[in-house]
Length: 277
Image 1 (cartoon, rainbow, N blue to C red):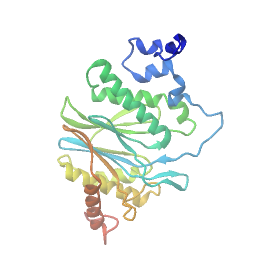
Image 2 (cartoon, rainbow, N blue to C red):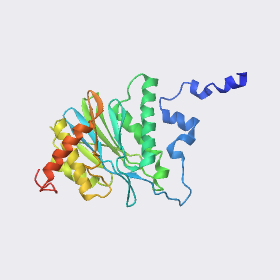
Image 3 (cartoon, one colour):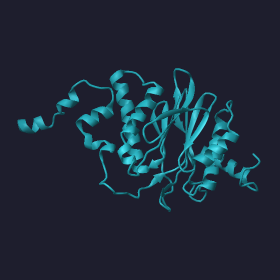
Image 4 (cartoon, one colour):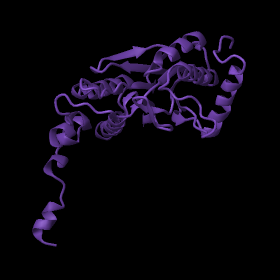
């Protein structure tokens, strides 16, 4: 190997200098073309891209749940029936995506690296509020694309190690960050899901009761919103449910979800609107 080839194999100098604990700031400075918000559409252009729909969150005694349906739509077409919309972002937090699916997933991946980078540089976990604010900054950077119809509106939840409680944060397209209390929902079916949780959620719910509540809420959303996918018994497609508590982040196994969804469906037979629970 020649001397020139050996030099080319080395990392660029930017990678060897100390700097910010923010990976997104580093990426914006040294490889801006890789940042999702840097990809602007031509003026007046629109893209008909798949969109994620309903995400719900609810706290319980000792933690918080984050759940989502599995349907992605593109106009009046079902673009995907089993899309993953809920992702763990580190050991104690998770995010659910609503909005333009491709950009949202890319933003989540960048956010995951952002939190991992901070931990490696600082030697400690970022506080839960710090994580929520970092995500707000990243959403704010996507405002230009949001103005062209490619919006990302996630729902963020995590277990706060300082207070020992589960917390929920919502956002708007400008990057505004708002803490929600008890429960919340985003996406096209959010109005129906939120109304359901208002009737069912209780502050003293344990994990089992909270799981039942979010599954009922997603059922109600799918019942009235065509963009939200309900349980698919034929294809065995269930909602995704993440649990965040003192032991960390985990997803409910498919078999457990299947049993819990069957319980919800059994309760709706003869009473599809859920007037009596």
